[in-house]
Length: 351
Image (cartoon, rainbow, N blue to C red; front, side, top):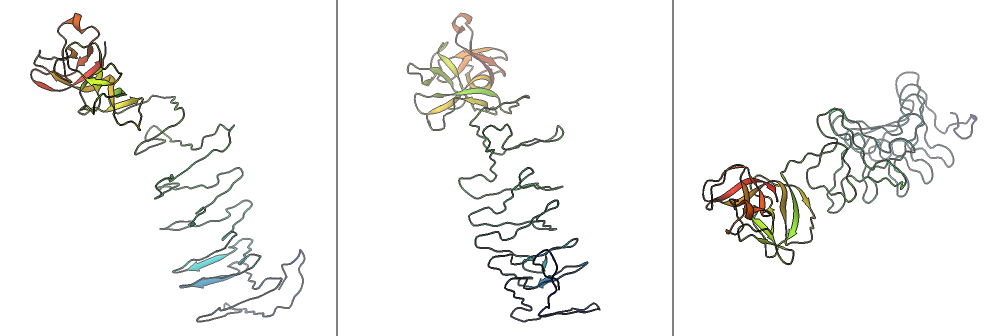
């Protein structure tokens, strides 16, 4: 056997040598409860296996560890191969190759041109990582991706967390002068989205859009303080002396501010000056379509009629007097209301 110490091969006499010219085992160890074969060395290799076409050392176990190596300072198990597997582990029920360490690296793979560590599975994870407090899987690269995930039909990278405070996926660009994004997403073609969110999205910096912005909801609203309690969506509101809004209560009121947003099928598309900490605030539609309370007892309302405040609290009416309506117009009716009171959609246009 040739020594691995130094660059030159030195002839040594092995403690145990086995040779078989047929297809059987040169050396074989069997144990029901202990170690089948154990090799110990103070400076060299405890056990060495070499093969020209198959595995140098093969370990197999139905319930335990296929190959178990222990070292105080060097590698517990080391495998070198020019064309085949450096280390191959196979298990029917447990781990094929298991690496564990108290302070260093459990399993370390290095490669100059190929894949350092590769895992493949037909039904489960190709590579699995677990940690109680550190990284489950940690990838480091100087110029390429630290971690890369490719999939033909599934997700390339999937992250989940049950934490009440941290994100499932976190991205940081730590270069203050860098122009690259912390997260970059690209979608080929015009179908689908580069980013899709279910739930609220918060942006603390500037938001720049080079294309169109499409909003599913209807009106542009702004939050205002209410003088007393809350108001039903669709209620006509007027400005108060202290700046807070009140429910309208007289006809042709030039203090009209708008309509409480959110009634019927129309929800606010944009809400300005939103303050989550303040409880006595509601969005008031200033522009766009909104459902509004209307009282047709003063005059039937037709499509296109101008609307103003009425004596009915919180209700609009048809503006029959153009001189009185100047400065008190709420908007235009989009549906008729022939009699009684009701909610109809209007086009908000304060004037």
